[in-house]
Amino acid sequence: MKTVDNYNFQGKKALVRVDFNVPLDANFNITDDTRIRAALPTINKILADGGAVILMSHLGRPKDIPEDKFSLKHIVNHLSKELGKSVAFADDCIGAIAKDAAKNLNPGDVLLLENLRFHKQETAGTESFAQELASLGDVYVNDAFGTAHRAHASTTIVAKFFPNDKVFGYVMANELASIDKVLTCSEKPLTAIMGGAKVSGKILIIENLLDKINNLIIGGGMAYTFVKAQGGNVGGSLVEEDKLDIALKIVSEAKAKGVNIYIPVDTIIADKFANDANNKTVDIKNIPSGWMGLDIGPETEKIYAEVIANSKTILWNGPMGVFEMENFEHGTKAVAEAIVAATKKGAYSLIGGGDSVAAINKYHFGNDVSYVSTGGGALLEYIESGSLPGVDAIGK
Image 1 (cartoon, helix red, strand yellow):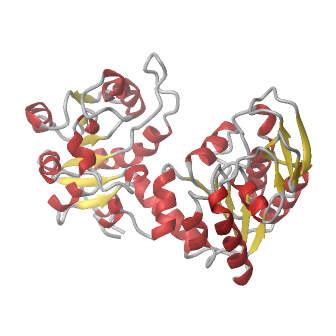
Image 2 (image 1 turned 90 degrees about the vertical axis):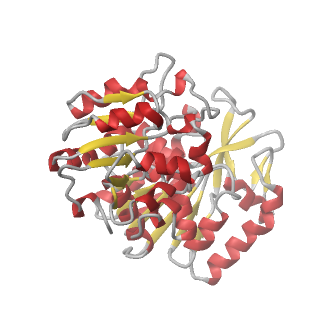
Image 3 (image 1 turned 90 degrees about the horizontal axis):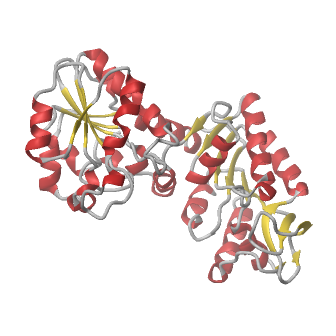
């Protein structure tokens, strides 16, 4: 894999695609700087070599025109503090403003370009736009795993203008290594924990994983589709009526391939979708009319914890319930705690997907698991297809 460790940046201007799409509050304060901190080792490696750094990123979803609330100027001070040096800012990512700012960089300098998505050519993958970006630097570094599944100008197209000078940053390299460890070099038993709202978003992932895993744990809203498909009464729980056949197919394929599939046996139900709803624990196959399942129950927690405890490799994507509500977070927290315990005993644990990462961070377990992925959609697409546009553009 071609990474920044294989390249000497002395005297070079490195054009680095980072993922600084961070959450901001109403006063433009960063509420979670995980993605910024993740990019620091790559930036510091370039600076230590004697290079200059030109950072490019998107922020939010502007409507192809400059919008102040999506300006990357709001993160300059925070980035400067994290790097321990002043970061320059260019009010555009192309044109005379960007060119002049890049031209005046000296070794050790850091420049942040304005939001790439203020230009519609970014998401369209326009070659001329990518060429303008490329003209700013001598070497291209992709360190934005969270956008590697998009064939955008800055993530994929720009790489063609650096035929011999393109490498992965540490975030990209670590993400790919962690996923490959789970998919190709995993110690058995390998357990995949799939949660979240819908089966439809996980079909291809699950089907691809069935040839690799020993255990498949199902949780979250998608569990009720599996239960109903097998004849259970799920009351007013979330169900994808048009995916019942697919749920049965997954169960059948898992059994045929010798994969143990675990579906909740009990559930915590509520009479409305609210934290203050009346709730109780019932058999998941017998949810009364007018009630909905919002979390896995205590018996299911015990079963899942035992499976996780006996696993050597663990992939977790998706919560077990509505963990944002205090009364329905217990199942998600229990699974997180079981993964932490298994990791302490030597298991390799990869946490991937936005809500799973949010849960791990909520319970402050980020340092107690093996790897927390920064890219939800990219991680899932890589598991599904084994490749990503942003990865293929550089070549592993």
